Each structure stands twice: as C-alpha cells, then as structure tokens.
Length: 170
Image 1 (cartoon, rainbow, N blue to C red):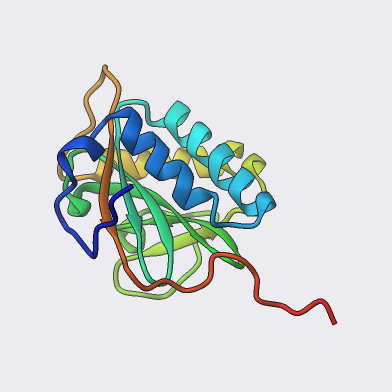
Image 2 (image 1 turned 90 degrees about the vertical axis):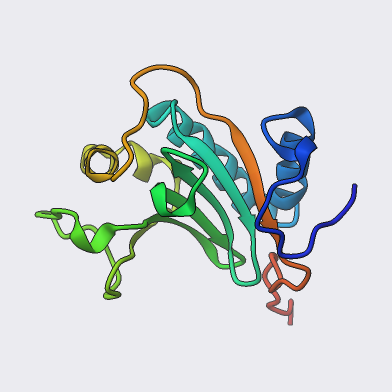
C-alpha cells in the first residue's frame, strides 16, 4: 500500500472505497487490541448517531483521528474520535461554545472540548448523545437529513508517536 506523507488531499482510491476501509483498518491495527476494539465500537456508535456525516481520517503524529463532519472540510467537524496509546476520547471541535449544563466536557482551550471514552457505553449515555446532536445542530454547515456519509483518508504523518503502550513488563 503506498504511503502518503502529510497529504492534505485524499488519494483518488482512498475516498469512499474498499481501499480506504483497508487503510483505516491498518491504522487501527497499530493499537493494542483493547484500544482497537474501542475505536471500532466507537466508530460504529457514531455512525449510528450521525449516519449522514462524512468520516475524515487523520493518522497524525500525536493522535489517530476520525472526524465526523458535515462536509469534507475539517472546519465542519462535529465530533472526532481521538485515539492515542493511552486511550480514546471524543473531541468536540467547537465544544467551548456548546451548552454543557451537566459539565461533562473536559478541557479549557478556546475552541475544543472532549470526553474520555473508557467504553462504548459512554457514547450511549443520554447526556453524551444530546451533546453530539447539539454540536451537529450548532454547525455552520448542516448535516443532510438523509443519506450516508463516506470515508475519506485525509492525511498520514510519516512520523508518529507509538500507538501501543511503551510500558515495560518489569
């Protein structure tokens, strides 16, 4: 499989195809099995919640990210699965501007907020589902009411932090 280095444009074959799914599977396979399973379960749950969203994939230096977006622009991202060797989170791209009466969002940046995802059950909690729908409603570009989004491999960094724990077994 050809590698791309920090490409901002998806390859012709990597947009919405079996090759894109295979490439995505190879990114996820870099993780410990328990983290990989959580990424896959989280992806399935977000696909259920946001079926019309496009999935934009970034295998970056710090994180592996699957963004759920109303277009193919990162700025139209609603939420993202963000995974590293130490776990999985749900990032709200414009989380700082969302109403969060239960204070479940973490972080203090000017824009982004997140929720740690210890299990897929977290994504099924009513408060989290409501926040996801609120984030979608607050987006500049609205999701279509029908249809299914597609998978786009946006970038792959040549250098990456380890996707598996580096703790020694001592």
